[in-house]
Amino acid sequence: SYLLGNTADAISISVALTIVCLVAAIQEYRSELALERLTELIPHTTTVIRNGNVTELLAKELVVGDLVVLGTGDRVPADCR
Image (cartoon, one colour):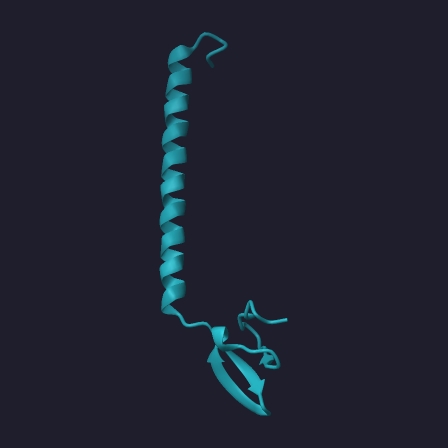
């Protein structure tokens, strides 16, 4: 629009794009914070076979030699190899 001589249109489009980008950035930031808060509320547990016994424990307590039992919908612990 600016190249065609419509300065007012170019300014209004620029302002609208700036507002949309700011709102999107704020929403993204808020959603990331909400997700972090939710993940802190839910403990990351996993089912393992340790020493022949099936046990449910926190994912951060995994040690070498644990066999992780996975089922449908289970989250795979990051320490799993």
